[in-house]
Amino acid sequence: MDNLPKASMESMRRVNEITGKQVPTFSIDMLDKDAFRDLFKKHKILCVMHFAGLKTVEESCHKPLLYYKTNIGGTISLLEGMKEFGVYNMIFSSSAAVYGSPSYLPIDEKHPVGGCINPYGKTKYFIEEILKDNCSAEKQWNVVLLRYFNPVGAHVTGKLGEDPQGIPSDLMPYVSHVAVGRVKELTVYGVDYDTPDGTEVRDYINVVDWAQGHVAALKYLEKDCGFKVFNLGTGKGYCVIEMAKAFETASGKPVPYKIAGRHAGDIASCYADASLVEKELGWKAKLDLAKMCEDSMVLAIQ
Ligand SMILES: O=c1ccn([C@@H]2O[C@H](COP(=O)(O)OP(=O)(O)O[C@H]3O[C@H](CO)[C@H](O)[C@H](O)[C@H]3O)[C@@H](O)[C@H]2O)c(=O)[nH]1
Image (tube, rainbow, N blue to C red):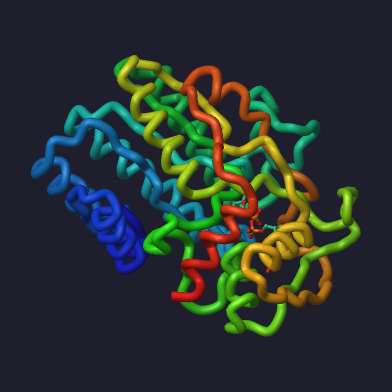
């Protein structure tokens, strides 16, 4: 379920092609309760993986109402639909953005949340609180919150991964566009942070590892786990210029860059303590930075 039907329908078609399975796929308006009802009536749904929502930090600073309405309104509508049809299992796509500007690193799940510095992060935080309250009030709910760090890369076939139409806003798709010559150069937002090379540090997780994290969470839900929170990251942080260099090595293509000022709503460093998810879910990221860059390149040259 998504607000970008064409993109998500195409992604699911490719998932079916890669896995050889036929996952039924629907595109509905998140705020349309009748559409939810039809979906729950027609299919036996055991668990909802709730990925739907808007996700661009910068855009959320300029269009906060759109973000609150879509992300929070859509979630409430979904929860009501699930309750009406007795579906009480959910995996929710949360974000490291709920931690705001971290007070210590690496960030574990006990780190305070809610000090978000942009509306996008606030929507994720508010939804987490809604889900927590709902689980406290009605004990039949099982909810796993996965706080994503920075998912990047692609499936090795190049059939699945982030390949936005037009000019990308996230770092890795942008860098791959530079490497294949679709855009002239990368703009690095800020080189005066307190980090090894002055550029921002993030924890980049390969989408294939990320997908396997969801499978592990799905198995965990079978234990009637109640309300649980896990970081989905690798535990390693890389600077922006380090990422551009890694991409040059993997692709054999130059990634020229220019330097610009800091971006609204950004933080210096953000990387996970991923030990809890390994202990409880038995999941650990396996794929390294070189592999993420290689697979992103496969997607970009198509
Ligand atoms: O053209 C670009 C694009 C990005 N960056 C920098 O590269 C890093 C990664 O940027 P991304 O846009 O790829 O990722 P963000 O960390 O900004 O945002 C990601 O993490 C957020 C939470 O912190 C949200 O989850 C969001 O959806 C997700 O893309 C940041 O330091 C950003 O400033 C650049 O320098 N130039």
